[in-house]
Figure 1 (cartoon, rainbow, N blue to C red):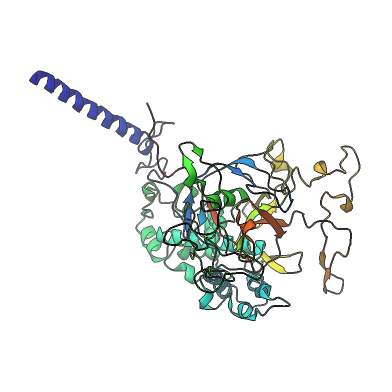
Figure 2 (figure 1 turned 120 degrees about the vertical axis):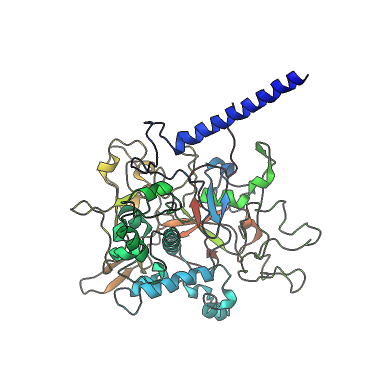
Length: 567
């Protein structure tokens, strides 16, 4: 019996040793040596230096993780509007991150404050940068309503700081997203020791930071101030001692004296950016179907971001309370004062209502939200059912004659005059100038053939009812969507002219400049609280009931919970 126990014990020990050696082998296979060449990785004497300690993407400020999956996108209620624009389709969405709440007045004011300090509107060169970012506070005005309190206070008064920002167009929301990405990456680089401490507080129009510029031409960020880009006095000390910059996130990099800038390979800088969510992402996140999952199927469908078919709570402690703020009937924006009131008549402070199963607040009610997509009456799932998105306009970095990227100088802001006559800054000083991809980039490609793909398969010549393969080019009047064409231009005298389309024959607002917005708002009836519902508005317009929230793509694994390999 003792001999048998001894054999079992010895076998157990051998098994543990084998497993340990096996796991060590797997670890060393990646961290210490290359499976491609057998060379050492991160050798102090040279060779390939890489970040082998990377865990997973860090969740950026304000965001929550949304694990991707398959879902049915589209209508679950009767189509009482008879739009026929959201027929159910099955889509797959990759994992991503989304803002826990809508972007608030407080968050947007931080953006305005930064613009005002870096590009002072008192300077004629920068006046339009600040003014083009300002929300339209006049959206609150109504010819038969007394709303001047919101017009004068809603954006800036601290009483509304935690309320969702409104009066922001789709274009302005996109510009805010770019700014937010750059400020986040400035913080990451400072924390990792790549840039000097508090450099982000001392920038001006000639020394701004851009994420794209840092990735493509890091020495040109912060106006080329070497002491700032390389970490100031700490960098000088390191270089004086002829030792490399330490990097806690990438031990291998510290062995390379030339590695003074963070690279994409280091995993320090966030190359995935704050952006508007796609329509598919927004609807998927709003539904929060994870709460209905049972093994590999969903137990039915959801009408709202919360469970059940009603807008009032069935919970014993909160029974009867509204789960969102919306217009309950004619002249009823909040209910009777007292117990049954939903605590909001216009927008509500974020987190006033319970989150959905993903931890997202106000995915129904409060304000509707801009999403990234160009509007079309159909979702073309026959062409694509993976990460569906209509709105791709592919660009590339502008390259100068000497082969370097073109970074805009302090006096080279690129402006654009929008359809509504408003001038907006498209590219700010310190950013890389972008140009459309051309035929050299698309030659013999099968995935895309043009830079602008917004009207692909719906709105382009081939999909128009007027299209004939060998016919001559058609006129503007033969477009599939005969939306108004408003023209803005500077005449011979230097005066700015706004030429409105006065045609009485236009039948639609749909074109490549209209964007989808989702979710019901404080102005909407219950019907619009369904995440599947979709509406559209020109991307240059703003209202008092449309806001936005940001999303960010996830890189790496689909799930945060790792699955161990079998076998």
